[in-house]
Image (tube, rainbow, N blue to C red; front, side, top):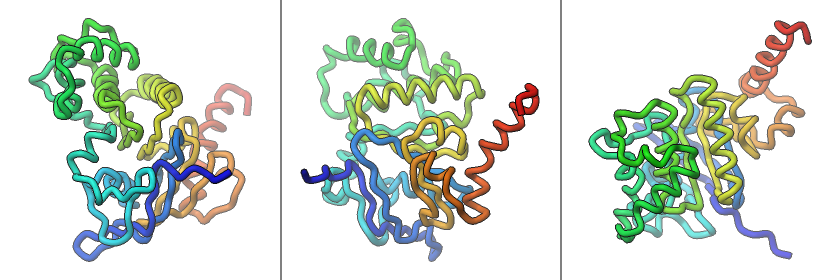
Length: 258
């Protein structure tokens, strides 16, 4: 039986800013329903790679493909409306209600306004927010609530691919953990394909199916969490992988279990 083509693939992707290569000949694929985490030091190319998928950054060489078709063959506006995008600063419009923020992309694609309230209520249920928040202004939300609204907005147009750039970075640890688990459950239930940028290797290991470790605009290592932990790497990659284990060991030692 022929293997299905990946939902998303980057082939030979290179991006340069002012002569400096932010990405250099990157190859990576993400299967249907897969959750890929991008980790690495600041400036390693994680966010640039993410933005090549929805053409917020254009490739200088190579190409990005969705379901085997190059994204460059689609208009940038149409492409972005078909891909969910969640980022750390959330980007909710403060003068709009929660319902208006969630309905932005469907409104742009000409969705029937008559079905808006029911769809918004459904999306609020999906992200575990009370339906009565629909009429509240974005400025009246807590950080965790606002980020959940950001997830609801990203899912409103029923995307098959969701891109996330440090989506939990500004949240407290408890809220961050709760939202991470909630999103992973949504990812599985909806059969999404997710690519997430994070600085937190522990978060990447707990949430993702595979992790791509980036360094200097290249992918230095890629595999499942178990595969990465079982292999030997250089100091930079090895340090990123070892940190969650050191944290766990310290916590166990504090409890007298080390």
